[in-house]
Length: 110
Image (cartoon, rainbow, N blue to C red; front, side):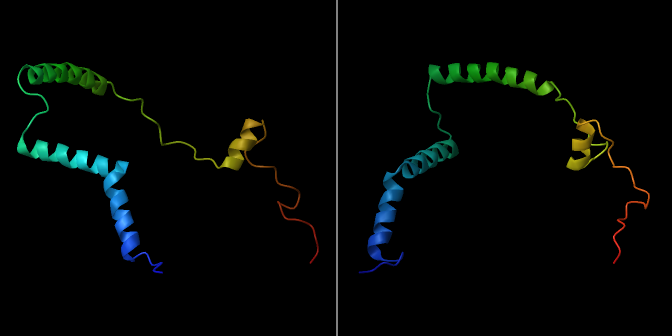
């Protein structure tokens, strides 16, 4: 009978979906990962942890080398033409059309 979003049945089914769906699983994994990080626990203890830190150091060197390369700068100073002007220039026309005898005004009498 109740069709409101606040009805007990709808709220219960949504809560169930939230916990059992992939959102709930991802949320639990994230919470656990953050908890371990705050407590200072590592994923692997002993030799595995030292190997992991060595691999991270090697990977870190590669990232530093990538960061040293400066990206090509894009010039922002220059003509900022409209799309209409670019279209005309691409087809070999002048950027602005020539003015007529009357200076661009139409000759219709009003």
